[in-house]
Amino acid sequence: MNESASLKDNYKFTQKEADILRALQPRMQELSSEFIDEFYNYIWGFGKTAQFLKNSTIIAHHQEKLKEWFINLFCGKYDMQYFASLYKIGETHVRIGLPTHYVNSAFTFVRTFVLKNIEDNFTTKTEHLNQIKAVEKIIDMNLDVLTSSYREEELSKFLSLSSLEKMILSGLKKFNSYINFFLAMALVMVAFFAIGLFIYDIYLLFYSDVGIEKGILTVLGSLLVLWAAIELIHEEIKHLGGKGFAIGAFLMLAMAALIRKVLIYSLSSEKTSELLIIGIVIVALGVAYRLVVSKSKEKIV
Image (tube, rainbow, N blue to C red; front, top):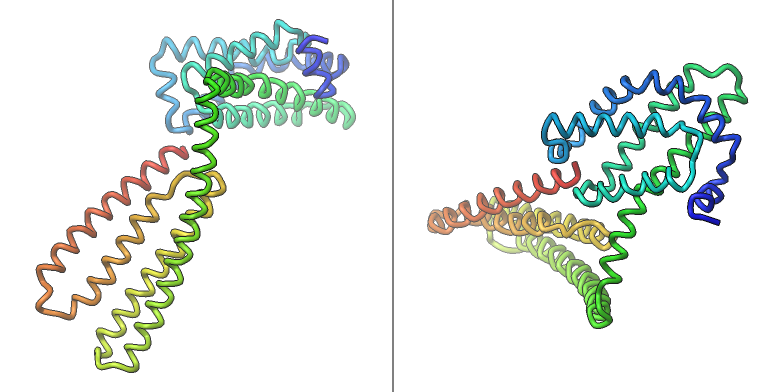
């Protein structure tokens, strides 16, 4: 059994469904220009589309190939040649560095566009259900083949490593995992110390002569540090789940600790120079935090 037959067998894709798609092709061909316009409106919302569609020549070529792919989606003949052409498209995506989530998101639009037009034009309920099943399967198979290029690219990079390199890479991954869990436990300890500091400051507020104003500001500062520590633990949990390292949370904790000092020193006329230095550091940390957060949002987009 060749790969195209195996793929269709895995998706339980039948000849009857291929015939249903072929019957849809004339209508979809009429809609192809509308599809291109709406597709481009959709992908320009990705934010970084202009990096891949840099000029009018590239855009015109892409629109031509995209229309050809869309019409061919309903060709009714899904053989080895058809899926090989899809794989080449996937290889092109890998070569230009197109993120996989762009591809997945684009296919969400394709699916919505096609199903909407099927919804507007079916005659019987049975025909409607059969068309939906056929469209869903061919779109999923297309996405499967396109994204397989990314998987094979990652696999080829790993297989190209020597035995020693693979062993080192595996060891580093395990070591990194242990370090992350150690960091998580250390953050829990920091949170407990912050709780202790908060309780101690409350004790001083009621059982010492620090003064009510200074005592309240000190308690507020400790509470701010505790809040920042909890937020850092929350970010580390997300990191252990596979998300990026939360450098922004560390910056936030540092700012919280310095703000606590500002709250305490603000009542002392002898701490003017220290307040000025701490203020400058807080501003610098705030700028760094802003840059980190902005960069993170760009990556998500």
